[in-house]
Length: 103
Ligand code: FES
Image (cartoon, rainbow, N blue to C red; front, side, top):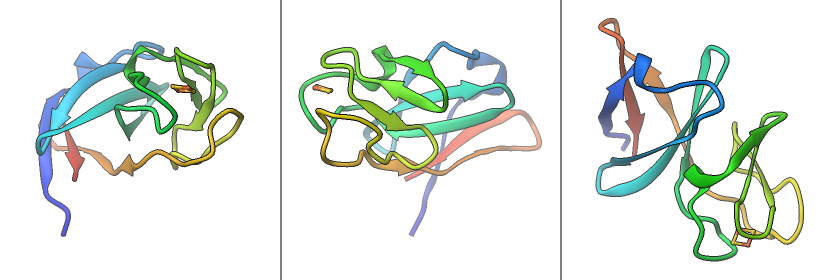
């Protein structure tokens, strides 16, 4: 069952500036691409790197450690050296402009 967790105001998340938050005790990286928000588990599946420290381009986040690419929308692997997808979480914006992540 999904439980929704408030992680901040919509205005807190800027295009091209990944943010590290916590939702339900889990580290989550939030990405804004234009008007859409995406949430991925904030730990690379290849090593000890935070995806919230990564670089966003073409719908992917590039891991800061070995430059593997994950799809922002699904968490799927888009390039080596990654072999395992990262968990993605649903995101919603409430009527009052709060961002919630489902964990
Ligand atoms: Fe992320 Fe190696 S730790 S690609």
